[in-house]
Amino acid sequence: MTLRLTPPADAAARRSAKPVVVYPVGALPKPDITALEAIRQKMVKQNEVIVPPRDARTFRVKRGQFFRIVCVEGAQVGDLNLWNSHDLMERFFSGKTRALHATHVSTGDRLWSTLPYLRSMATISHDTLGWYGWDEDGAGVHDVIGTRCDPYTNRLLSGSDYDRCCHSNLARALATELGSTPGAVEHHVHDVLNVFMCTGFTKGSHQYFMKASPVRAGDFIEFFAEIDLLGALSACPGGDCSATHSSDAAACHPLKIEIFESNPGSIAHWSWPSASAYHRSHGTPGEETR
Image (tube, rainbow, N blue to C red; front, side):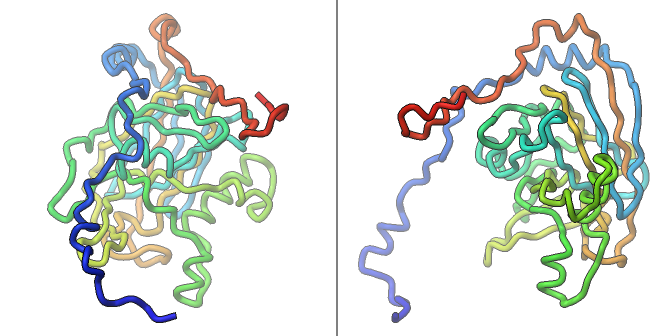
């Protein structure tokens, strides 16, 4: 087959087609940020977990609690996985979150779960890096476009093995939580929310790029749990991801997870999400599984 290199006569007209947002979200239920802010004012810290550099830790959050991911020392990126704590098949769906919100998320955006559930797992309730927006390179913070650094891609590109990639870190942490082995549970590790990571696509080749994270000690991103959650957070071996990852070259720092209890009365009227009501017959009569 000969590759077509000469543009057709109507190439300009084809390229001039107007873009259409794939998922118009006007009908998408939005969180009540005013109410959420009022709930935040009465929350009380219950627990914290320190995530060592180039490692990961798990944590559990009940529906109605808040959790924060906090930068405690130098600039550090984290890779976040979330599951329904009662059913690991329901987990964070980064692709649909990206499609419903944007390539990067912040206050008021929600983290959606996989099909067939498709509901909000958590709402971002506060983000001290919300000021960053989009820079001149087209980069933003907290992306849902990168998948996580992993030893398989590292071996594909470098021919060498490295065991402290975020995928491996998350697999080890989940294995410890479940009393299993990393190899037996790594299929549960999924595409992440890249917390504090500053990323975008190059203007010329449209390649995924990273740059130094703007996070500083004391910065945090905070979430309101809308279902019972099991989480895992990896302190990426890339550190602030200004130059490299999947190695021991970058300076790395710990991250902290803080868990807060909300006042029961303050969340009494919150509208908790249910799993999708789609009948799941997929057009086959009599096959409803709902």
